[in-house]
Image (cartoon, helix red, strand yellow):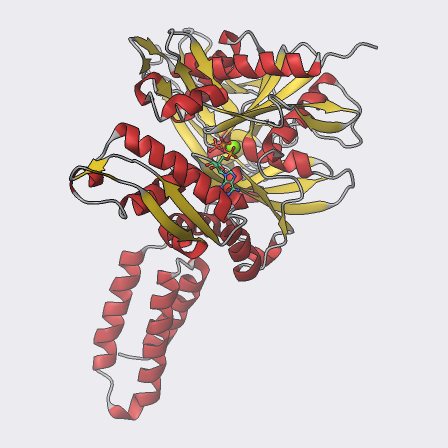
Length: 564
Ligand SMILES: Nc1ncnc2c1ncn2[C@@H]1O[C@H](COP(=O)(O)OP(=O)(O)OP(=O)(O)O)[C@@H](O)[C@H]1O
Ligand SMILES: [Mg+2]
């Protein structure tokens, strides 16, 4: 039987790759001799023709004004970039990269490249996602699905067995840092928490190293910004950085970076790995703080993580692996080259969609039920204002759409508030509140029990459109929720993490301070005990330890109750 190939594309900030599934295994396409990626760079050559990839990157230092880099950061912004005299939208610029991937892959594999899965960062908004789809269309591609990069990375690693595991993906690419905590169970991937920084990546490391190199040049003009020289220094820095991943010392010898006091300026220095690590210390630290926060959000400890997957070219920097392995004790995996792990996962997804044989079930399902709060009658016959009514139950394969009818609760009701929740409990207060909107200006004299239709439309990119329709008047209100952005809270229907009321705690501490002032020396022991509890309470507050604070507040109240 003829099977249509669906290719996977990683449209990166710095580099892009394309892959497909062959006999159940992902194959990354060789795009040029020995090259399995192309730089995500677009330019105009001297004749005014569009050029892409290595050719465009090579001219960046000489013609920065005719070259566009890191266009991914502008996706969905509504802005434009100029090359030569013309303006281009980010989707247009990206389409040139996609078109180039398509053409090169067709030439290299002999297959037609039409249907594709494209990956995007987990935090990409709806607008950014649709801009990505538009770029695909402009390149003559049929974008059958957009998937999140960390999910793709996990797909590349996912095993056929039925084991259940918690996987953390640390994806540090050229322009963005993405961290995702996932639970894989029987081939189903559930995102538990995500975080990231769209301005953290290899580009920043290159810039940091460039500034370091620039500090060895003479003063005056050399310390000022200069488009051409900076572009050249940045190229040098990237090459040095890459060498430093395998060597501990790199010799830089660059001649004629300009003239100073009538003499040519050359750069001749040795850069050590330690020098480099110092330059990027703050950035790496930031990435580890984000990682901590993801683990905390999921209420886990690093020892609960079964494996940590490294994705993105920048994770080839040895320091990253060292910290994750030694300081955190993670079981770090990078069997699959981090450079290609995302594109390989995209190819796996493409294979799944096209129905290729895979000995694992990998389908997209929603990991938590979604519903609204409504007034209901409890089993004991009482009215319950906090009843949770589910529209899309967990593990429903997506895309999925569901409409349910609800009724206004009193006569002449002017508005209906739709509170959206995620979770599994029958009562909304034990689920995660997501968003709320109002369907108002209902027509006058509406009888109680008038019908309001609520629709949840969960699309494949993790966006849920919730709409409320007053059937009588046809009035409709909508709200779009990005499910990717709310994961991590209220996992398995647990309530949102309670917020610590620090002001209240400080008030209690102040009162306690006044009270112990009244204690005479015969009660020294109680005094010390109270002081000790206050100290612990302050520590718990600093650590945002909600449960700890609650317990200590109760202890403190107990101790204070003994004082008049
Ligand atoms: N050996 C290496 N050591 C350090 N950095 C490297 C190495 N090889 C590649 N890089 C860096 O990896 C980055 C590119 O990684 P990758 O291709 O994963 O990013 P991307 O997918 O284009 O970006 P993003 O994920 O941010 O959209 C570049 O900054 C590059 O300099
Ligand atoms: Mg990437």
